[in-house]
Image 1: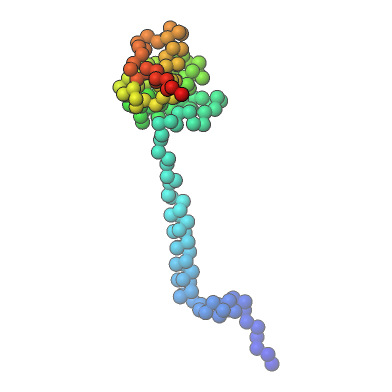
Image 2: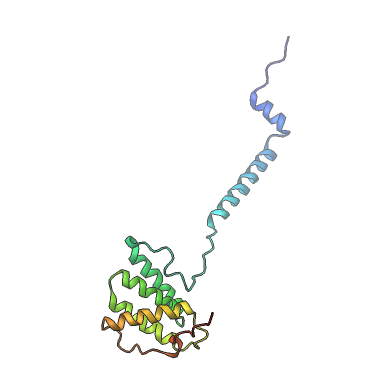
Length: 159
């Protein structure tokens, strides 16, 4: 006479090496560990990139100009002594057809640039400020935008 067939769960328990409370405790500990790992990963926020002085004109879309201006407002607030963000916000205000706000930003940028020694102001920024100042003056919006030493032309180099 042959032995009765073993139940499939009995075979699995024998194959795993143990059954009963010890196996249940190991299974519970494993479940708690996996849940802890998954929960810990889900709770960690992603690191935020630090705001940069030239972030105003990164990712500008005409259909989302309001959001670009709001982002640029934060950049201007983060860099209150830097004329670059104000110069870039000038561009956004111009795109939004708000010339008064653009020229107000430019006046502030010119004032900040005037505090920077002429040799230390970025030549591209200097050029932008000169051109935009002329645009505001010609539009009648340049009150108080006197040229500063920082905006003097760079000397031409002999070639």
